[in-house]
Amino acid sequence: MRLDRFLSNRPDLNRQDARLHLAHGHVRVNGVPTMDGRYEIREFDRVELHETLLQAGKPARYFMLHKPPGYVSATQHPEHPTVLDLLNEPDKGDLHLSGRLDLTTSGLMLITNDGHWSRRLTLPKTKLPKVYYVETADPIQPEYVQAFADGLYFKFENLTTLPARLDILDERCARLTLIEGRYHQVKRMFGHFRNQVMRLHRESIGPIRLDSALTPGDYRQLTADEIACGLSTQTINAVP
Image 1 (cartoon, rainbow, N blue to C red):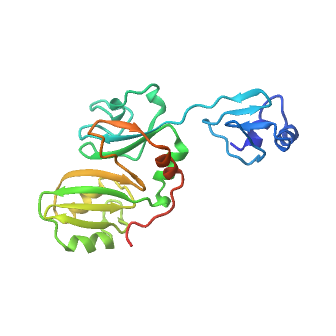
Image 2 (image 1 turned 45 degrees about the vertical axis):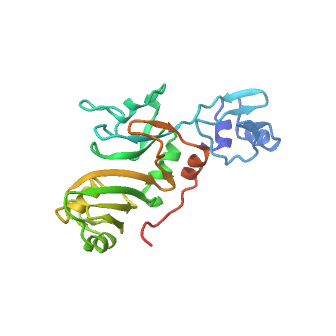
Image 3 (image 1 turned 180 degrees about the horizontal axis):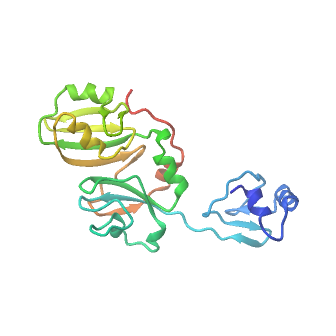
């Protein structure tokens, strides 16, 4: 909500009052005098008028988790443990997942209570590259590279996947970079060649990489730089 509207919504203030308080520097957001009524107030912001606290704000929380196989990317599930079960944190009901991984897939997961930050990372128009390490049952052939770059047709959705970059690392392992995240996309792309994915591991989302010090099931808070990366994401094409 805009700051001027936030102020004028109070029963003891009107629009004119809000404009005057802003113009005279009476309003502080997170301790900083703020005169711009267009400033977007979120639930994490502390807002004060003179010495009166209008909104205390709450701490924004950002976590990086090394998801192991066997955990569901959900906040609750009737049959399987969820990734939130791995977190020893209070008020886990306030947290949500920024992007998901299949039950058998491991790797980077981002968990937060900041919906604005999460949407910046997951909106399709952002086109953040997601990098996966893949191991397959059969050898990965050179023709996969061009096919993935051209896009593969998924009949069920009646669509063609966006260009993806495939780097073959060894006979049966590769690194795949996607800018979308359709249902079981990686497995279906290799399935186009009737080659089963045996291991799938997400290494990064945009500029945020999985911390190599985290073992499966471990997590840590994001650094200030990592949080800032998520807030400043720009549209990026995964294929040069």
